[in-house]
Length: 414
Image 1 (cartoon, rainbow, N blue to C red):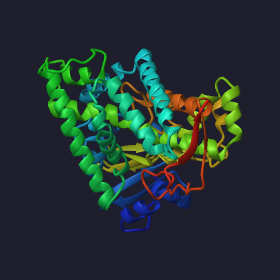
Image 2 (image 1 turned 120 degrees about the vertical axis):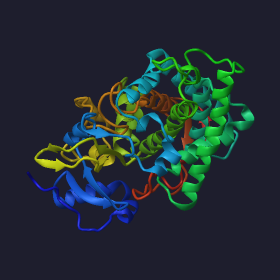
Image 3 (image 1 turned 180 degrees about the vertical axis):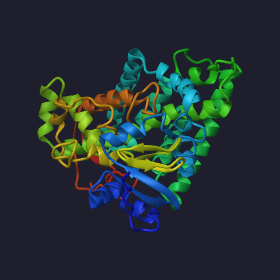
Image 4 (image 1 turned 180 degrees about the horizontal axis):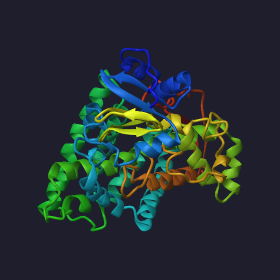
């Protein structure tokens, strides 16, 4: 049995905050391995990177999600008691609600709603001086997903609801004021969606039967009981919040267009280049850096011993940039996806494994469709200038973004 390499630091919590997306890969490179042991928040932690690591990490027989995710993420990003923290049959049943919404027709409908919102927004952009793309995309996606999910969103509330959802995303990895805003956003959103769930259950609000609001409010367990109110609230938010989060990928897509103008004409000329470009944006640019689980029982993997109950972190960003998996991994090259083998474990921006039985994000297909719709809009529906601004992306900020959030001006519809 081989000994897992140990990092020298007594506790690496501060280093994780300081190094951000590079934390695990820096140490894997230092130890010349894809596994090492350290302490995070004074907990023994094993860190993993790479395709083989992802395969074992998403083995439900070896790992649990319950009590694995840090409380600060549950209190901001995903909610306490959400589907991400469940295991076994309870997880499988709850996951089926999400997957039932991911039909081709429903996903196409959401993409069309976002396309309409982009067109409406562009009419206003022509009249203004500048557009902060991240902020604009947050609002566009909030409008679209609420309409799609059957959640009423009066015009007067759009800014408030959008800001709360965006704060939950931005503050999940933050400290001090950014974290405080995320907690506030979570509390406000849960109160809002709680009222929606109550009105549906009390027959004061009618929503389409194929909507997410209907699915979570009126779902009955195999025993015939309604899903508990808090669980319904949290997981309906887990439809709204991830769609709003796609705004970051859209912002990075615009940044990629700006930094790689040679792709612009290819997106116009080549039928499938939009898909290649979208996938490379998801691989290349930072979204969420890592994911946590806890070992279900003791086991051996690659001659390493994993004790029962130990915290394990999988490096999402590092796996997507692993030079063993991706040639010239630090280059933005959409063409690489022409030869991609479509593995469920070497390209994991939104997790790996099986959608139906595992913990891979059920909204990944939606992410791709919504991104492709936005990309088509940016390339074929408007012209714009990119003024001088700070487009630096810090890998120590989690989740990160260009400092300027990508500003456009002189927007004209084509």
